[in-house]
Length: 416
Ligand code: LLP
Image: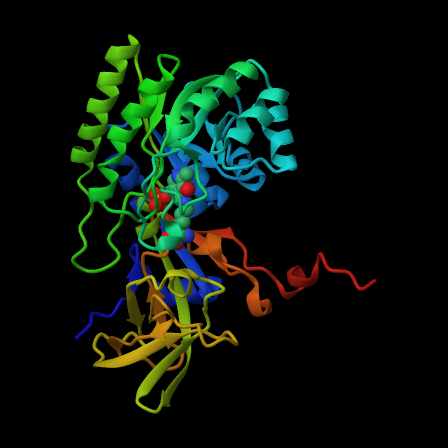
């Protein structure tokens, strides 16, 4: 029998649901802090906040000596709201990484003095014209990549990301022309990749750093560390990964005659397992041979299954406190007016089923490993208000984002 789930971080799920409503994202701060600790051997952990960017989560990261990556003006705004400071500290607390500057963001990084990690030669020129004399870092596409889905593979020529590894010389010329200095290199080959692919990156980094030379004072291994979504998936061997990068950094430091700082830029690794999406079962229907549990959460709340066919663990929490329920084979879906609104689906949209405990209307389905790319990819599709977020810290559940109201949905709209 599949175990039932009654609590998250020792707090009752039905109580959380009645206090804050459903659908509801709940994060366990302890998991994030533990994960930050796993990466302590790296000189700098830079959180890729796109995974989960609530300012309370950023504040938690900041209080645990984690600096932050920002990929938009909005993410810079969030970092500042969470107490990160702009400027060229060592390490900088906020770095803007992207393949373009939109006009608003270029103004923002120049006016606020936010360091930039350039993912295209054009970014070098556009920034250099506005901020001559500054240091920059370059995001290099090493010519290969890998992700849990082709949509999250960020290396190779099928990817739009980074500066092509054979264009480093051209970029050095651009920096000289615009009087900026390349102080660091960064490589991120994909998200949810595996150690086999990740372990190829350090050699590519070494070649690229040697091509730039001794202006390099930091290298970033990027993000992409996988996390276990399925029973039996293991956590990656961080010690072995660090050793490999440390050796690369050591050789570069020796060559350059100065210290080279080693950064890592995880998103999922810090946030995924801390987060749960609690949804209420609102209908149980038999459709031919399939039984459907229909929840009050849909792909407006968690888009990873419809986007990538991603697997998320699921548990049932009985509202009446039952401790045993027989299993049944079910399809789990949401409320949206679209057939793809199914949490148990495979890549390509094929509906699959899963063995879960028997659930009745009013019970809860809890979707696990939802902390990364869960809330941040949610939407107002079907005019569904964005749901609330709660952080559990020191045994207390605190609201870190209110549920949107119906008025919020139309607040910015006008009938001319
Ligand atoms: N650094 C850069 C430059 C990135 O583009 C990303 C992710 C990360 C770090 C963090 O990657 P992570 O450690 O989380 O794997 N929505 C997709 C993931 C897209 C990630 C895009 N970039 C998903 O739900 O799996």
